[in-house]
Length: 162
Image 1: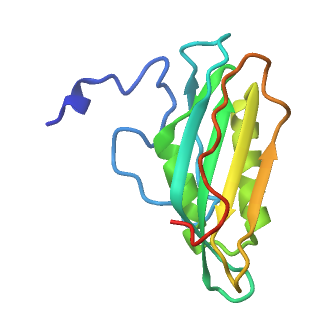
Image 2: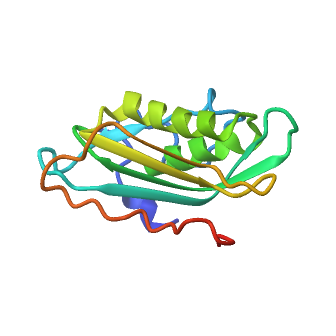
C-alpha cells in the first residue's frame, strides 16, 4: 500500500481518467494513444507548463532505423492541463512509429492543441543527426500572451548534443 492509495481516483476533477493510478499497457502507435486532461487549477492566469522529453524516439518511415530527439513542449493552459502519464505514454507510442521528424513533431503539437485548446503552445523538437544533419522542428500557436514569462528552451545548437 502506498500513499497514492489514499488519493481520490474518482470524482471531479479526476472523473474519466483511465490511465492514472494503475498499470497501463503502452499504446502501440500514436493513433492508439489516449491523451487525457484535467482542469487547470489556476484558470485565468498565464503560467507556463513545460514538458521535456530528452529521449524521444521514433522510426524512419523508409529505413526503419531509429531516430532520436530532445523535445520541449511549453504551453499556457486555458481550462485544461494534459495529464502527464497520458502524455508520457503518448510520446512513448512513437517508439515503433514510422514518420519523418516534421510529421512526428506536428502530430504531437496538433493532438495537444485539439485536447487542450491552450492559450498558447510551443514545441521545439531537436532531432539528433542522421546522415550528418540534425533537423530541428519548431512551431507555436501564436505569439505568447503579453506579460507571460516564457523561458528559453535551453537546448543549444547542435555541437555533438548531449
